[in-house]
Image 1 (cartoon, rainbow, N blue to C red):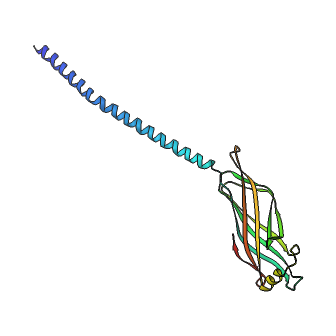
Image 2: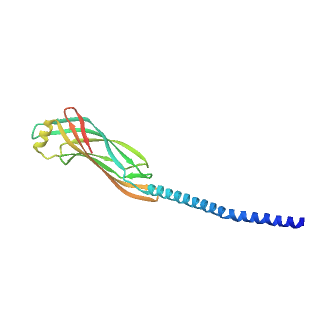
Image 3: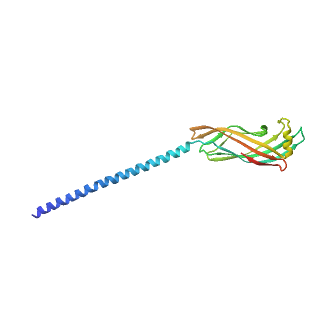
Amino acid sequence: MAQDFLTKHSLLRHQTIDQEAAMYKPVREKERSSKCFVFVLAAFVICCAVLLAFASLLRLRSPEIKLRSATLNHASYNSASPSASFNATVITHFSITNPNYGAFSYENSTLRILYAGVKVGDREIRSNRVNGRETKEMNVTVNVKSSKLPVTGNLSSDINSGTLNLTSYAKFSGTVQLLKIFNKRKTIEMACIMNLNLNSHAIQGIQC
């Protein structure tokens, strides 16, 4: 009888263990499913972040050009009509900012200064490049003369007023290159109005 009792006790114990294992099996499968879902979700989020970063990297934007300042190095003038004239040396300081990760290579360009819509001075700017995420600053000196202007009474009156309204204009065309694979043509322009004060020999009121 003792042997039968031990046998029954052993069977009951195995049944209890099997029942407990059967109870814990769904819980373990549920935990595994939850972990898989978390891993898949994390991988999806990481892939989206990488794609967004790559798309932002490939978005090639236009560089920005800005006239920072202009100074007058020399100025002479004659207000007597009809031989009114002026001669000046203007030093411009401007910058080109490249917001892209690839370099911006621009071609030869020209900085022009106009009076009443007529060119009175220009200066060639040699081709160069602006590296990615950098700003290139330049000083360009332009000799301004009124010899190309038509003979009118407006110049004489403007000189007598002590102020000449000038416009500086520059256009840069070039290519933004990324990873030596992606190339995009970009053109940027700068047009700024400035007042040449003949009395104080200064450039004032720059507006771009």
